[in-house]
Length: 539
Image (cartoon, rainbow, N blue to C red):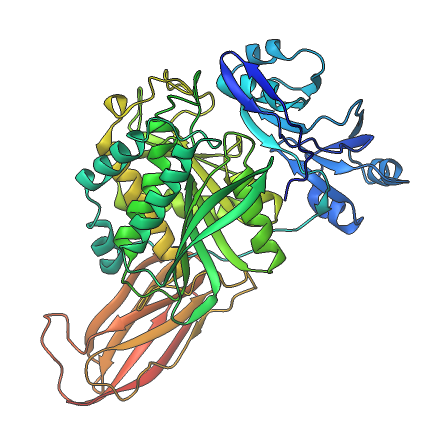
């Protein structure tokens, strides 16, 4: 929750009414910038018990305390203190271009910039100007929180198309995507302070409710004397409901005249609609882990809604496997594709998303650790793995109608949005796990041994599943033989990475004929391992 003081006045900035019941943060007297270049810098902050305000891919911001500077310096970390001169809120500003900083004037103050990101103390009126000029804002909390380390996980490593995933991907409907972007644009403005944004919240709630999910709820939170709402749809996991994977985007928008016209088609009806289209495709399906579809407000004011939600998850100690955030994903200039933004701790999740793009879409795609300033950052701050997908080539943001009244559906590529939706569906479903999936998603990345497990069920009539794990990358062959030692069927014959896998045998031979009742043997072979177990087919 962001703390604030209610002031019963109005400020006017470039013709925009700014409610002056704004958050006025009680900024600390000093704050420390700690460079990330030293190995395990975040782990060092954690071990020292320091408190975190925020982070970028280049530095962490921690609370100053007695002995903190000396302890950090002694461990080889570069520390820069900043003394704060007022009680103005503190922001990180991710910069598409440096000229944005020219509008910062007293009482606001620029504390630091490296050309890509700036640390600024400013009132909400100045923050609005910065956002309108294209700055991506992250409002730092009044009170720091403990350093949370992202769990090390072994993410799935599928190497061939999966029929279940392909069936889900095939549900993507470009007309459905187009109509939802148009509907959000038709609100005329989704500026977080407006009644139109409240109406858009209700539209998203109604849309998710109509899909037949297990639950759809508003997630209200206070900001500056107002109550804004996130919307959360949930499909409860069937085997590991305590684990959660989610897709998200922000519905709010901004422009030169946000109170009257901020259509926000690309930024960010496009990302909102990815979350909604993923929900439409996945509703009614069974997954091992719980899947959530979340739409935020307050992003343009500094990630307010996602910060609230990520803190809520952390406060409940939710086991979040990963958050997939989508922001500005339906326009392209030169390359039909996307950039996947992430931090080092979330690289495994980003690589999974990258593989899904390669396997199930026609997207150009690449991963960068230039995290930017969208809602995935809120999850990073709470120690959760998260990615933020945006237009190809970021940084910088190249969309010419960014944060303007001209950001409309007319300039977007619906085929691009459809391919992004396919990537999102494939990643989220693989992450959550599903019946017959190759690996149980989200298990801790512990040292693996190459192991062949008993088939189940056994005996079986229809089909059975064979599970195995691999300690090293290499050629893997999983085959079924009859009692005479003759090959019946190859289930797996390919190169695979370390991890846990499963394969299904439907009781048929290589020619797709059903085998007769009897005893069969299945064998797992790698370059350094061989094991054989028995299966019984009953007709």
